Length: 550
Image 1 (cartoon, rainbow, N blue to C red):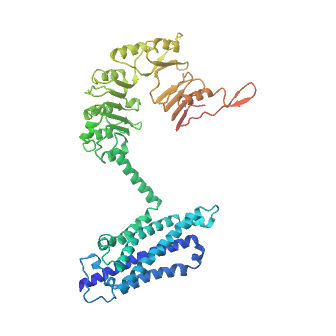
Image 2: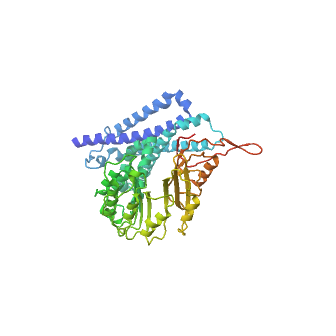
């Protein structure tokens, strides 16, 4: 007796809530259509079009299943099975008239009405979109109700997909073959209405812009992770480093780039066995590390040499290394305390050093397979602007197997009232021994500070920056340069800026130091009229610093 009451209660609420959900979805489809295309009519007669239908739908579903389940007289031999799905079903399903009525009125009717009004809605919207001059009122309603229309349409279509197979099988079951689809109903169809109720809130939420953005973000992260898992090269910033390393094993990963990263973070990474597994360490052949101190010196003494040493201790098969692309003086490598650094696999090395002795330290044979060495060197002591002898003595003679020498060197002297000053022609003459290289030189003298500046470099230019450009700039094309600075005691005229725009097509950061006003500012005079100067366009410029600018 106790199990019968439980089954009656359970079955009643289960069938009533499913039917009420179907009727309410049908009612929502009708009211959605009326609100869009007959809004004035429904707003004037809310009682007839809104409140009465809503009350009828709720009361009818409750009343009909109150009769079908608790009040319906079952056959004496009928008993509920507490262990079966919905206790084996209510007994009215065995009564032909009640079963047919329930199928047609409570399932087929709302499903068909739902289908009709959804098709009407879709058809009228498509026809409306094709109109040459659509109604402004309907257009505004569609824009305002777009989210509601999409939400209800998604819920309606899901409801139709759930109930249409049920209707087909029940009709065949009642009128043709009582055994038709029994296994399919038991395994699948009984659970479809529950899925509709479960999924409806999610279909409504997915149309909210905040939810859509979050969903897109999750999908992008998933796709990024899947892409990374199959990547051979990873370029990471410190903010995403740990998350990505913990996401997988990366069996195809052979290259690693760590950029905008602090010294402390790099050292922690290299000592963490969880983040860097032995598999990653052994399979890595290319590493690039860009230390960023945000112009604040690290609390770790000799941090960069320590990191440099750790790299060769951890990555046993390293062939390519780029270390410290930022060449601020306090970030450069300097081996004041000689460390144990060696590798028999390294083929290419890019590094920023402080002193020439540091360069010789790395080229003493400890990297016996090295064939490419790119170095940004801060200091080379020289007796004058002409440094070709120093290049031959201090570099070429130390590396007899050197096949190609690419360089970018600046020198400075104080000439103190000297009369016989080195010219650019003199510099070019001393560089004649470098026959296999195209070498550019530029010489400037400052009468105020009594300083001489010489800049010589291999062309094509490989660095990402070009500092202290003067009016003697020789020109050329510098496709790698993104950061430039100007300085001169003479004014920069319009033609100078045109040359800069042509020479540095990818210029992003520009610093200008010049207190002298232009001689031909704003226009130039021709024989016949005043001709305005053309606009100089730096297409990629994102930072402009004007210091002591006129």
